[in-house]
Length: 136
Length: 90
Image 1 (cartoon, rainbow over the protein chains, first blue to last red):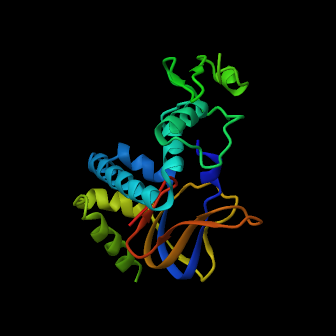
Image 2: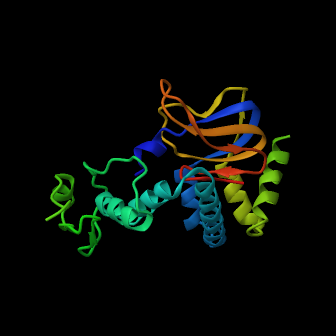
């Protein structure tokens, strides 16, 4: 459910801490028990998204933000890399020669590489992983 | 003392919505008070992130990285901040 990177997140206390802790499953069950939790969840979700956006601007550069966007929207990282090259004109030393597939766009998407090669994606993640989507 | 912690959370939630008494009792029943010593873990390495945490007092650090790796701090969590498995917010 969560990306590997998020699984490794930890919460150590830097000083003695008192916290209220709830299990996510029990917390989510509240949504079925009272309609007010729908409203609370919607407000919290909006707030979290705003804060997350602020944090990403503080912690990530343009390249990392674009890769996160591509991952969230199931765009192939190869496409993201090519689009990034088009948008920013360089790749900041990051190699995209062996792109790892993180999904594919529902519709076939294409982007033109700096060399002018047409880049297309097959609607199959396994083919994408095998590198078939890189350039045909 | 513990009631004060719950009231603190209720006041923090009032930023978004005023919980009626029956809903508040449901929510209060879900949360339990956890006292974490200095350098203790709210979520231990290797644990599945399945907690919603509200910080009443103290300071937590939210970081990624294994025990043998250099940790990367994501955010510091101070009083009146929530953390979910997805993201932390003030």
